[in-house]
Image (cartoon, rainbow, N blue to C red; front, side, top):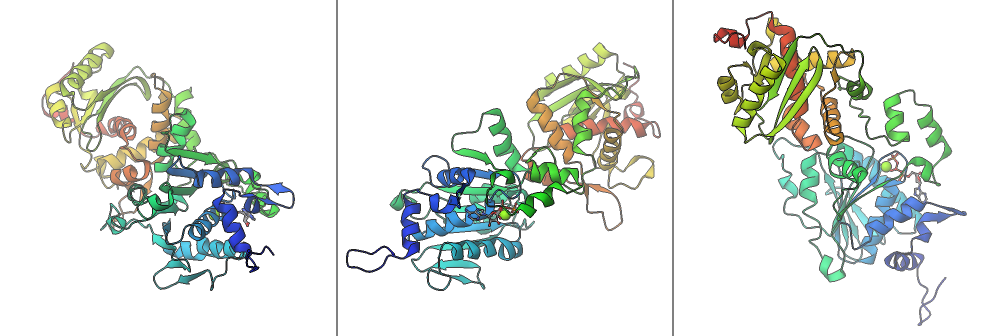
Length: 475
Ligand SMILES: Nc1ncnc2c1ncn2[C@@H]1O[C@H](COP(=O)(O)OP(=O)(O)OP(=O)(O)O)[C@@H](O)[C@H]1O
Ligand SMILES: [Mg+2]
């Protein structure tokens, strides 16, 4: 035992806290001749003066929870009076899992539950004897509080979103503004939001994973992947269990850290079927051409136009939504170029789309119209979305038009959002709503909408096309 100058023993916790404050993490990341290099890097990032948002993990078992608990416990001990949070989609799971890891971590480093800190199970917070505190936050999405105003005025030194894949975009967006507000200047601590995760195509993919892959992450953000194979402290059964999983999606995501696989059980298409669209040689051109245009764009600034030959997209254009005249001119020019009659040209009729439909005298698509042929769908858009998924799964759709890598990824992400949603009380099939998709992926599903409109023509010959109704014939 170390002694102070007046011969009092220094506790092991005090020594570890001192080591932590000097960013000397060996006592955490090294045991029995083995070292967790990624964990050390993670702890360096968590205590640096450079990054304010840090995404860690992207696979199972890399020591995400242990790292988060260790970081918070020692930050609390190092900086008396500071205030932190751990947030998770469900407070119940936070208490039943992450909190238990926190207790385990504290016991492992000799931090005494009743002496150094106490847990208040009624109001869900951890109170340290030195005045520091960790709140446990329930980050469930509440329709009555979509912007997470319940946390909009709380002030934290820093915090941790555990299992970011389960958490709504609004929680991240609000909480990142709540850190850096309690004693940060006094102690010279940068505001820090730590996010631990398994791969998930939600806001983490858009804000961290994808920009990191492309080398365009803004300097205040960082993504550090860590696979279970990089954790030397993992139980061997953990890896063999993952390896023996028969579910390919699970294995790709959790064992290999593959972000392109989404595991929503409600997804109507598999990742492989969607990605195959760009190299699909099974879809054939029929010589019958169509144009679909998505121009209404509530909440989006893009208008997309596709030219189809059968179910093959042969040309695509994208415009700023404000340029309505240009959009109209483009639709007409494409019609003439590809010889597509008005009745096989369709644009959504909502918002500014109504003007485009009228001025170009083409067929209008109303998302909320009743499904054609009396089928059991919530509305026309749902009917077409389900049909689009069928075509994708049957390898009938191909995109041969030039599409940038970034747009391809957007398209794949959006089509993964083609998901079954709560059925109405009347039992009608529904799609995951646009607002929910936007909350999850951070942008409006433009590609999904312009693609699904093509399916209107699968059903349309059951009814008189709208433009024929209006007397618009031929070219
Ligand atoms: N520094 C460490 N010292 C001792 N054991 C550690 C350390 N870091 C991680 N571990 C061990 O590694 C295992 C996995 O860690 P942890 O539960 O934090 O991983 P995870 O990434 O959160 O996993 P999951 O994906 O299952 O949530 C645990 O059994 C934990 O005890
Ligand atoms: Mg964990």
